[in-house]
Length: 487
Image (cartoon, rainbow, N blue to C red; front, side, top):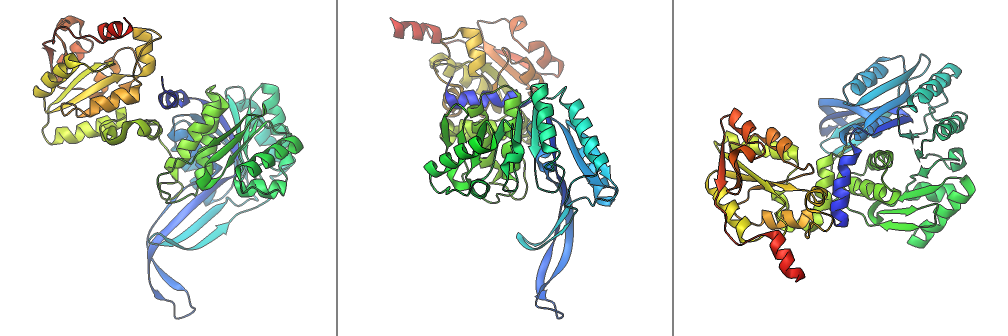
C-alpha cells in the first residue's frame, strides 16, 4: 500500500472516535447586505441588510469540525444566561455526534462576534463578551464534567480562545485529570505564557504565537525547530506542531524527530478557522491510535482543504480521501467518488433516465479480460459504476504481496477507460453494502460465476434489477500474469 493510500484508508479510522473538548465557545453572526452609499451623518458606508446567519465559533468550530469528520465530541464550555447562550445551545444540539455540557453563568455574557459584510468585504466586527475566569461554581461544574467525560473519551482537546474557560487556575487541574485517566492532552494555546500547558502531550501554536511565547526568531525551518524545542524544554510539553500558513507545518516530537510538512492548499480563500480544523483532525486521529506524524499529515491535508473555502468552514471525510488520492489520479480524479458523492451523481443520472450498471473487483494489473468484461457491462447500461477493492481489502483477499498497484493507481487506470463512468473504492471484503447503497439496475460479473453465487444478486432483483454474466476472454488472469513475471 502506498503512503498516500495508507493515509486515505486511515480517514475511516476517525469515525466515532470519542473526543472530550473543553474551551471557549462563541457565536459567530454574519450580517450581509449592500453598501451603495455613504451616510450623510458620518463618512461611513450605509449597509442595507439583506440577510444574516449564525454559526458556532471558537471552540464551537472545533466541535463542528469533529462532527464533520465523523468523530464524537463531548463539549464542556460556559455560556451566559442570555439569548445568545440559548442560540449556542440550540446550534450544538443540531450537530450530529455532539454532546454539550454547558455551565450557565448568570453574570456572564455569551461571546458573540457580529460581522457586517457587503458582498465578500467585511465592513465592521462588533464583539459582545465577558473576558475573565468562571465563577467558583462554574469552575467546579467544568471539572466535574471533565472528570466524567474522560471515562469514555480517548483524548482531551483544549481549545483556548482566551475568554476565561481555560483559566490559569483551571488548566493544570484539567491536564492532571487527563494524566490520571491516561488520556493524551492536545491544546491550541493562547497568550505568551505557555507554561500554563505544562504536562500537555501536544501544543499547536501558529508561527506568530510561537514567536511571542519564546521571543525567538521563526523565519526559517531551523528557527522554528529551535523555538519549538525551547518551548518543549521550558514549558514541559512533550511535542509541538507549528502551523506556518503557506509554509505548511513543522512537527517536533519528544524523540527529537522533526517533520516539515509542505502546505497542501491549492488556492487560499480564507484562513479563518483553519487552526480549529487542524486541532480537530489531529485529535481525532490521535484518539484513533494513529502515530503522531500520520495524525499531523491528516491535519495538514484538512487545513489545505478548509482554507480553500470561504468563512469558518469544515472538512468532510470524502474530501480528505480525495485529497490524498489527488496526487496519483491526475485527470481521472473526476471519475473517483466517495459513496456519498456517488449517490448524488447517480441521482442526477437517474433524473435523466439513465440505467445504472455495477461491477466490482480488485483490477490489479488490468488485462484484456478486464477490458472485455467492462465493455460488455457498459454496453448493457447507460452508466457503469465500478466498485474497487481498497488496498487493505485486496491484501486480505489475495495475500500480503498484493496488490501490485495501489488503489489510487488502479482507480486511475480504470477511470481512463471510456467504458467506466465512476469508480468507488470500498474497504469491505465484498461490495454488498455498496450495492445496497447505490441500488444499480444492472449487476455484472464474469460467466465463471453462477447467479446464485454473485454477491448482491438477490438484492438487485428485489428492486427490479437484473444480473448479467459477461463472457470471459480466455487465457487472462492477474495471478497468472504475476506468476509469469516471477518465473
